[in-house]
Length: 546
Image 1 (cartoon, rainbow, N blue to C red):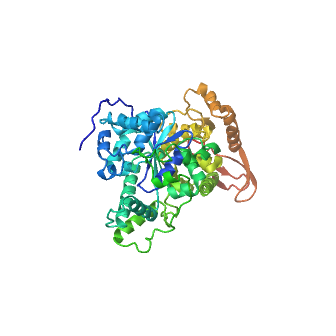
Image 2: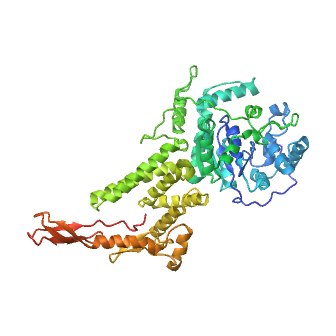
């Protein structure tokens, strides 16, 4: 292999400086149109396929250009990279700028793909980039290079039904390489589809939940406004009508057309997309059955079909009866389920009198809610206002607030909620309550005084850091002064502690019974008939605050 000489030293880079979005998908997954749509968001910048992480250096990338393509006039292994550099480094995509970009790359043969991408990201700043090379997922080595290069990167796992993916690939190969033998098709293509998605899923399993989202390409193209809004919300970006309208016009991208004829760098995206980049609805088969005439390797097809169902195609259901593709949840149904669970949660807590069986049911309910919400967050991130409404986002917070049996989950949700509040996608008051809850669970003083307990028969705030400044901190997030909040709780406690007038269970004569402290029991004796008994008051969970 002949590697181009490098006359420019690679710069010292900071891997955490940028946080690009990488679309992970095999070829023929509608990556060109979907990635370009996302990249049209006002705060993003879409790139064509760069192929920067398939090889260790730029020199290796350049040397990999096959003779087959050289004979057809191609002058670089990555025409998208040449076009991106021409546009962002040299100002346009004229023949002169494309030639300058190729020369620039030749001088940097020893640079890594990340070194080159950093140059593009610097030119596009403060907008973050969207990049979608299928070569990024062609090997585990490429994914490792990607992850090491950008530890703050976000990833969109884009899927397409295996049948339409393979049909599209067959048409593409027939059009571009008609003389190429089709040995083993269509199952060879199905095997590749399965292998790439399995590789992406293994990679995704090692990422924090807020850095990976899965979405079906068919959903993006068939329900574009809702799906693009969900993606923008997950990224913490604007979701207003203007931003979504911009994303619906991929044809406005400077890379949504062919490069100059005879330039040797005309592509960078799927050629069908470059011929007509206007989004349109697409087919999504209702089953995972192979089409008539497809045959061979039944075991392979069963494995691919099972993976397809896991990705949300066909009639896939999880053991609890929910769809397996969390990224494409019906958002109205998700909001309704959040509200339903919170209604049950609140009613159960109000009715609980502290009996062991009741407390056990509460714990079981909390565990079930936590497990369910964790699967939702794994798929779509934090349920934001723009996804599930103000009440739905508040409901998600309440379920987390009551997830005391899973402290690591609460801690994880605290980080997600903090980002959502920063993006104006959740309420600062909810963040204040969860912050205090997590701090107290760690044995540290709370910050906002939202969590209370009963001491010496009175409601008191749990320990507070720098208590003299607590009202200022509360005001900053929209909470009333602490004394104003504690007043009603203490008045209620005094009412509950006062003697109650109740009929004797034995003779029905009126008698006074002093209510016990929370969690305690007091005995009574009827002055009329002498009957005795006990009254029990349930103990509130500590801390008490929501």
